[in-house]
Image 1 (cartoon, rainbow, N blue to C red):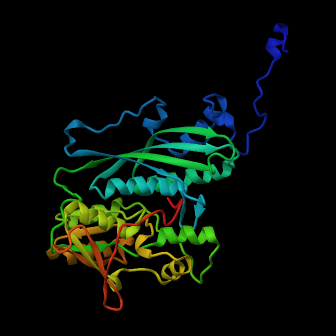
Image 2: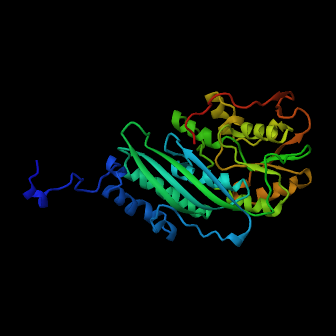
Image 3: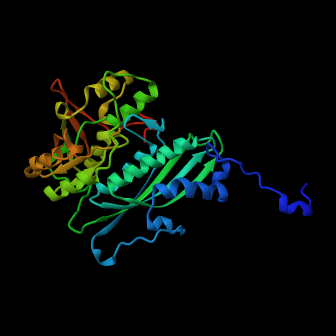
Amino acid sequence: MTRVADFDTASCPLPHAAPAQVLLGHGSGGRLSADLLRDLFLPAFDNEILAALEDQALLPVAATCGGRLAFTTDSFVVRPLFFPGGDIGKLAVCGTVNDLAVGGARPLFLAAAFILEEGLPLPDLRRIVASMQAACAEAQVQLVAGDTKVVDRGKGDGVFITTSGIGLVPDHVQLSIRNARPGDRVLVSGTMGDHGTAIMSAREGLEFETVLASDCAPLSGLVRIILARCPRVRWLRDPTRGGLSSALNELAAGSRVGVKLIEKAIPIRPEVQAACEMLGLDPLYVANEGKLVAVVPAADAEIMLAAMRAHPLGTDAAMIGEVVADHPGIVTIRTLIGGERIVPLLAGEQLPRIC
């Protein structure tokens, strides 16, 4: 027991050297938490709003600027944390930015909450934060608020990240899942299934002659070009969990229309197709993290296609089908052999822990 006389010489059981991994003390709200904030997070996301260190971020969105605020939130629990083409940090930024962008919003601000597992190597956390910083710069957004918590070893799988985002939607942009009309065309901005297949291939140790990489990327720049060139676009969506199938089934149900796809028109990388066959997966149900699906009036389809192909993230854009009055609420596909089948919603979890 420390005597009162020895109080001035007593010491708190803190590490004498900078720790090399996340400790439970990093979530205590004390000195280790402050060190993590000062040494890792604040330098990465340096801006005046975050640096104020208030319990809330005061955002400079003028009431006279017009438009509507868009707000979204998402959690990211991918395994492995690092994969070809990205990592959980890049994924957390791009996923939230893209949810705002496909609603027609210009993404402005993000907040992030980190659930860190005791024992996570600090170099891995620095790498994740640096990746988030680079993704924020590419998407032209600021991370202005955040939080960290630490859970016991074995309880957090390294790190989980939740991001929330705010963006501004101009008054003239009216995208909605209820906007589709028979005769509209369905387009995608590129190859399907890249992200989920890259994750599963890394997890299973599959090797191919070419690198299977995630398509993880912020779509805000591509969406700005689309809205400028094709303002009559009906609907945009990033087909993440559940892939293209889930996105189009949701559209068919929301607009009470049918959707007819053409299998040979859907762009899929040969290595993705091969990996899906090996893993017993259907590329139509595999997640994407840097692609979008769009519905436009037939008269604007070629304009939209040209606009997407002019952007680096849309070079493989394709027209893959149309909206029909037949079989409302149902998505069908004309197969490579000429038959037609229903593309139902995914039943169960095809790819666990991919985003």
